[in-house]
Length: 156
Image 1 (cartoon, rainbow, N blue to C red):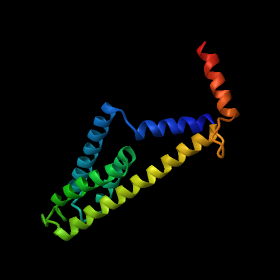
Image 2 (tube, rainbow, N blue to C red; image 1 turned 45 degrees about the vertical axis):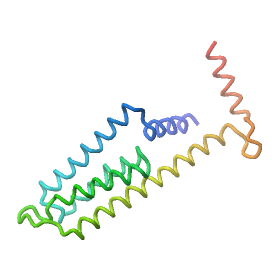
Image 3 (tube, one colour; image 1 turned 60 degrees about the vertical axis):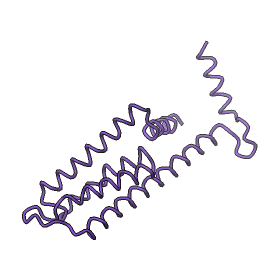
Image 4 (cartoon, rainbow, N blue to C red; image 1 turned 30 degrees about the vertical axis):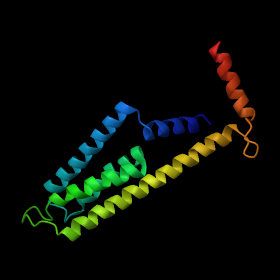
């Protein structure tokens, strides 16, 4: 039970960051996006599989900011990959169809991740509520009473 509570608190902290943590999260996601772009450029361009590394910052953005973060950062990552050539050795640029497809795919994947994470967090919240309240009557159960009693005794 304690492990479940710890996990729920940890997920809530990560999912709903405080104001300063939001700035750090956005900064970290942008650093990761530009790092992936640099790796893709240095390893030969978007023709090779290194562009798939972009899913790491996109999943992180979806986890921190939900589906809206997925849409926002997926759009930015897709747009920024349009500036990376298909093959660096020949400096062959991507066709608009190529990078628009990639942009749409990044947005779809990160938005879907955001929706899935939202559903998981809602389910965890419901499980946490069911732990302490009766499902039918919505009245606090014995577990809730014991927890309340322990808090009152420890606060004295």
